[in-house]
Length: 330
Length: 287
Image 1 (cartoon, rainbow over the protein chains, first blue to last red):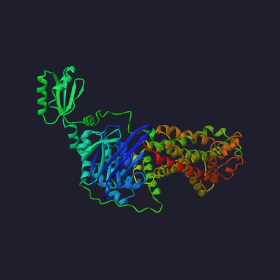
Image 2: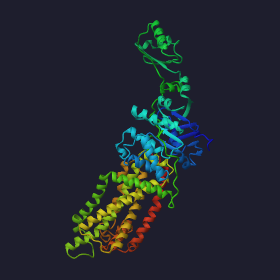
Image 3: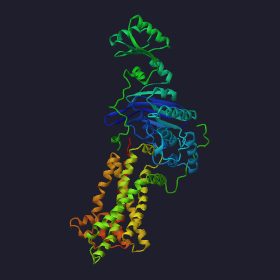
Image 4: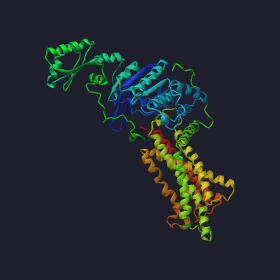
C-alpha cells in the first residue's frame, strides 16, 4: 500500500443533469506531497474533492485514495482522510470540545485518545479559551480552525482542503496558511483547492491548473510562472485610439502577446524594473501620452489568459453544485 | 503543531451491540445537547400540548359527551377530562414526527452532513440518533403533560405498572412516527418546506381518531377509517392501561385488540420507513 500514490485518479467524469462538471480529470498526488488544485469558480475543483472524499460518485473514470477505490472501498478511504470544505462542517450548538469529541467517537477511537487529541488540537489551533463555548459564538476564522481540527482528530494521512481560506479576512488567512504549513512539515499529504495563485504558491509544491473539468497545466509555481511570462506590464494611455500604436512601440520590451482593452494595454515581460524604463522611453519616442504605467505579479487571470486564451470568468452558468439542494437525492 | 505529543490513534474495539447503535448514540447525544442549548424551543414544544389540554378540558369539554359515563353535567365534564388526557398524549407523541422532519432537513442543509458522510461511521447513525433523541425528548413532554393532566382532574386508576406500560407504548409510538418524519425530512428540498410538510399529515391523522371524540359519534363511513388509525388504537390502549373511560367502542378487530394492533402497526411502519429513510440518506448529496 505504501508504494501506491496517496491520490490516483484517471479520466474522472461527473455529470450533473446536462452539465459536465468534470470531463476526463487526471490527478496523481504522491505521499507527503502538497498539491494545489487551481482554477476559477465552476472549474470542477470542489466536485473533484467531493469525489475523492467519497461524498460524490463519479459518472465515469477511476479513482483511488491511499490505494483504496473511492466507490467500492469508500469506508476504507474514509478512515485515511480528513476533509475540510468551504463551509465549516461543525455543529453550531455544540462547544468546540464537544464537536471534537463527537467526531472522534464517530471515528471509533478510544475515549482516552479522543480526549487527549482534542486537548492537543484545541491548544495548537489556539481555541483553548473558546473550547467550552458554543460554536455559534465563534468568528469565521475560529470556525475554520475548529473545522480543520475536526478533520485531524484521527491523524489522517491524507487531507483534502477545499478552498480553506475563502471568505476569511487577511489575518485569519495568514493564520490558516501557518497551520497548513505546519501540517505539511509534519508529513501529511495535502490536496488543496484554491482560486488564488498566491495561495497555491504559498502552500503547494505542485500546482495543477484546471478549467472546464480537466487539467490544462501542471508544474511547480515557478514553472507555471515561467510559462506565463513572469511579471506583467500594464500601461494606460490617455487616448484609446493610440493603444494599438503603444503596444507596437513596446514590442521590444515585452515578451509575449499584448492584451488591449480600451485604453489599457497589458503584456507579459521578463526582467525587472528596467522594463519600465524601456517602455517609457519607447512610448515617449512615439509621443504617446500615458496616464499610468506599472509592473505587477501575474494573477490567476493571467495564468488563464496565457493557458486558455480566455479570462478566468466566474461562470454562473456552470456552477459547482454549491449548496444546491436541487441536485441532492438519488 | 510542534506541540504534538499524543501518539497514533487508538481504535475502539467493536462493541457487542454493533457500530450502528454506538454511532447512533453519539449522534443522539449531540441532538439532545442541541435541545438543551435552545431552551426556548424546548419551552414552546411543551407549551403547545399544555394549551391543548386546557382548551379541550375547559372549552370543548362540556360539549363532547362520552357515552356510558357521567349522569350530571359536572360528572360529564370530569369524565371527558379523564377521556381526553390519553388522547392528548397520543396526539403529542405523534407530533414528535414533525421535530424529526425539521431537524433532519436542517441537518441536510448544513455542512455538517458532509463531515458525517465522510466519516467511517454507520450510514444509519444520523437517522438512528435523530429518531432516538426525538423519542427521548418526549419523556419530558409526557411528564409535563401528565402533571398538567393531574392538575385538571385526570387520574391514573390502574396502578403504576399499567401506567408505565402505557408510557412505554406512547414512547415506542413516538419513535415509530419519528422514522416517518425522518423520511419526510429527507424528501423535502429545504427546511422551510419541512416546517409545513412535517405537520400537514399529522392534523388529519390525529383528528381522524378517537383522541378527542368517540368513534361511535362519527358518521358510519368514517368509523372504519378511524378504527384502523393506529392513533386510535394507541389512545384506546393507553386509556385502558391508565384505567380511564374509553366510551362505547364499535366492533372492529383493531379496537378489540388495541395494544396488539398498535404494536403491529409500529413494527410495520418502522419496517417500511426506516429502510426507505436510510436509503434516501445514503443517496443524498447535501450540496
